[in-house]
Length: 381
Image (cartoon, rainbow, N blue to C red; front, side, top):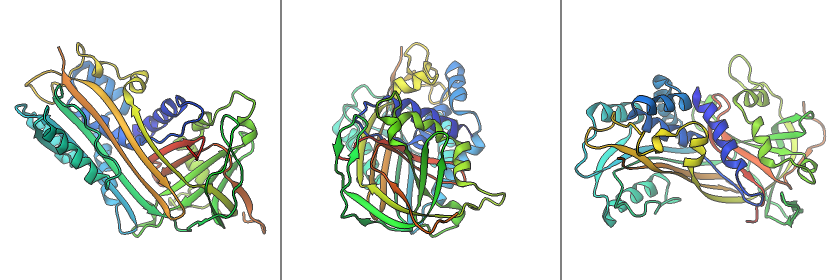
């Protein structure tokens, strides 16, 4: 599915652009769904660009959205909501509204843009969908005709919970500075993958889930050899190339029946507690990835959305919140696009001490869907 390809491109484009000292978080699946909402209203060359970027498999996209709703349960909380808000006086095409509802379970409503109350409607909706982690993202709406929003929230507890560590080892940042973050520790059996050729290791930490085990979620931590990041041209973001759908399958070694066939390995894990908040301007990234006419007042074609006026996207952004601690992970993302008028187990544990920059990704092994991916260059920022 094209969502996997977009996940890979988006993560590399955004996280590679970060300054060396910065941490990052992004939601590839949130971006994919928000772009899919926009594609429903696109026509002509604009539609062709969307298809080139995210594909044209409406059936699989609809199934993906329904699956995300299904995976919410008592132990792994996953909220996924879509909304299209348009200015009072604008009428959406009936066919567009029908697709929004049937394919994305999306809310569509008219809003009094240009007023404080109008912005509050959307901010309150976002706060509710993200359990209050993200809000007040809508500012001045005086020139806004429509806003497309995807909101995502997850909260999961580790199957094997960590303890706060009494150790405070040095964490060497990407710029060579030494910091001392609060560490979590656990000595236990974990899924583990090593790549001696490319000099990185990956450990997997599973979240509790009450439903079908095939729908479990995990966090992977990819830890490059820290010596590669010192005194060389290598950056932590260079290793994002290894988080591809093909490699995720290889890391986990799933067998024919979709069950994990890898033998767990005893690891002695030290992992920093981190909390990351990001605000991403998506337009330069999407333009690099081939989506250009959607942001052009002269070339954008969203006539499939409404015949009342001409639209183009003047803003596209994503805000993310990720909190990783000894109990588990809580994370939220809001992706929105604003439209305006156009003219084997050893006897001893293997140390897995995360004391240098690393990549984290929250994904579902059985499907390869990535909820969040990011880098930590300095856990004390």
